[in-house]
Each structure stands twice: as C-alpha cells, then as structure tokens.
Amino acid sequence: MRIKEARTEELLALGVFGRRSRLRERIEMVLERGREFSPRVSRARLAVSTLGLLGCIIGGSVAPGLIAFAQQPAFEVASVRPNKSGAGGAAGPYPVGNRVIGTNVSLEMLLELAYRVFPFQISGGPSWANSDRFDIEGKAEGNPTREQFMLMLQSLLADRFKLAIHRETKEMPVYELTVAKGGVKFKEGKCVGEPGPSNPCGGVSGSRRGTLMGRVTSVSDVAEGLSATLGRLVVDKTRLTGNYDFDLRWTPDESVLRGLKDPDEPPPDPIGPSIFTAVQEQLGLELKSAKGPMEILVIDRVEKPDAN
Image 1 (cartoon, rainbow, N blue to C red):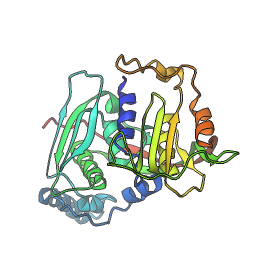
Image 2: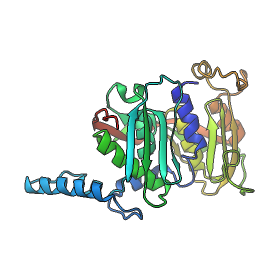
Image 3: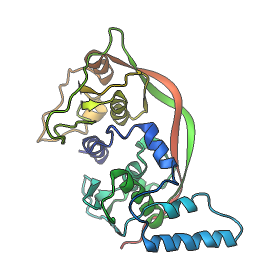
Image 4: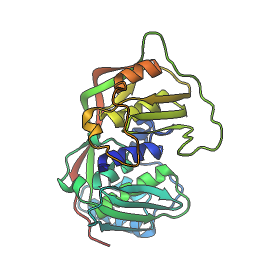
C-alpha cells in the first residue's frame, strides 16, 4: 500500500475527523493563539522565545507570530531523526500517554496533523516535504489533550524544521453536500459498548478501499471523511444537526485500485457503485461541484532538521 493511502486510512481510523474536529472549529482553534492551556510552556522554550521577543523589541519591530509562539505549549523533550530505511509505510504521529511518536513520517504528514489540514490545503514547500522521512518522538508534561498535542507539534516544527507559514483564503473548487430528492436514508445513532476502531462512536473510520463508517456522528464529520477520500473540500450544506449512524461503501476508481494490491485483504467489488452514486443511493445525500472559500496553509520557509 502506498504511503499516501496508508496515511489517509490512518487519519480516518484514528478519528481525526471526530466530532470535535469540524473544519471551522479546527481553524478557529489554530487562529486562537492567545488562549490558555493547562500544560506549562517549557522553561527553556519560554526563555528562548522571550529572548527572541526582546531582541525584536529592541530592534524596533515584533515578529507577528512570536508572542503567540511564546505562549504555545511545547514538548519538554523531543527528538527528530532521519529515517533511511526505505520502508513503504508510515506510523503516526500518534499520542501514547504523554508522548507523541511518529515512524517514517514526512514533513507533509506532520503538517496535516499539526494544523489539521488536508494535503490539498498545503501550498509551497521543498520537494523533500513528502519524500524525506523522519522518526519523531516528543514527551509532554502532564496529560495533554489531542488539541494540545497538535499545538506542541506546531512548536516542534517551528523549532526543529524552522517552519514559517502564513494562511490565505482562496476561491477553490469544492463539493457541496446536500440532501437528495427523497430525503436522507440514515437514522439517529446511539453508541452501544466501548468506543474503539471497530466501534467509532463520535467519529468516522474507513479506508480508500471504499468504506466510510460513522457511529453517532455528525454529517459535518462525514463531509470531512469524504474530503480526505476525494482530495477536495466537501462543505456540509445539509443543515442536519443530529448525530447519526452511517455505512457507506463504494468501488474506488482505477487509479486507486492499482495501488491497493494487498494480499491480506480482499479486493473491492469491481462492479460496485462510484462514491458519488453510493452517497446518493446509500445515504440519500448528493455531492455537487461548486466553488467556495478554502483556507490554504502556505509554507514560507522550512529547513531539514539536524539529527538529534
């Protein structure tokens, strides 16, 4: 399985598109740099940031993001090492207790998780952003939430990769998700049992093999899962506000099928419906091409990290 496909499946399975990960909320959280967080900023990080801020003040200017960076939580200890294994898959980065671990991950993968964006929302950057691989590990103080881990990854990228970014909003092709004629074909959901990979209550799971399943989750979350699958932003226009159960199955197109040669898994049904047909027939929803505003993460500067 190709790295990009493995990554998409991993993001879906880990619940990145869970109830609290709606696109608007994600953007608002990233922009809300002045908020307080329970983990303390490491003293070393705060000292370095403060010295940098003082230098800018003395020089007569303050870098726009520097104050926010000083307030942002960071890992107490972190390591980034090149991965030269040549392996075809990646794992993580994912939180384990108070650590975050990533194996054979690319800069693009780190950006996707740290800023909760899709690959098509990343602009600029060097050619090695998806070709070079790294092993990363960060240890945090206390018991951070997933959102706090995300901000710590942002600090790691700024520190070790010298990452500088800005955001732009552009008019881009999107899909609008609307209710089809005849109405929806799913029902309100109720979580039974302990949530997990096979029982993803409050989020969606699936793969590019042609599955997308949600339990007690919103239509907006399903729209995000469809965005990852289609490679284009899907905007929820249904005005449905409940939490529902979904089970969507389709046959991926030929370009995807060629990269799904895994002997341990059965191939998708070659005569099954397309994703557009499946959305309408199985969910009672419709995907319509349109244009709309989309936030883009623009890479202004980034460097390969020193190995340590």
